[in-house]
Image (cartoon, rainbow, N blue to C red; front, side, top):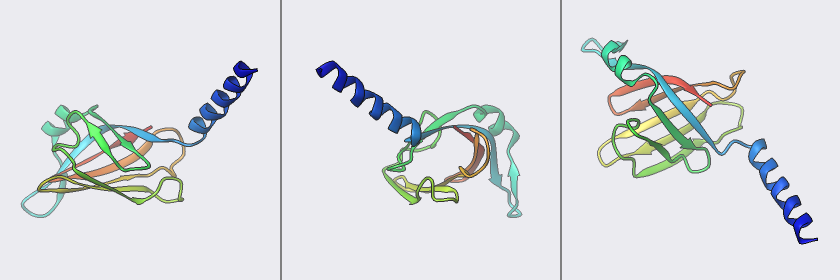
Length: 129
């Protein structure tokens, strides 16, 4: 009897995880900087060095973690627009001397969702799953 109850509880718990995404895993594809004329331009060397760098974001807390993205440790996180509300999932996070902003365009078709991340002076784009 206990085994049947445990099996049922595990099935219900795992179906809840599959139904709602608890985090995104994202990979950078391009890096942009603002030039001295105020234009946003792709930075080829940074793009080459950062392409494929991964980070994750928790959709409940906004906590972002990655080895090279974000560039500096974040100490405060805030979800500005929760996941599943029809528009982009938006997160604000702050380090000791910078602020950053992430948008995941989760309303796009397919499993790969485009993102844009402004992290200090760099702007990253790529896909999250």
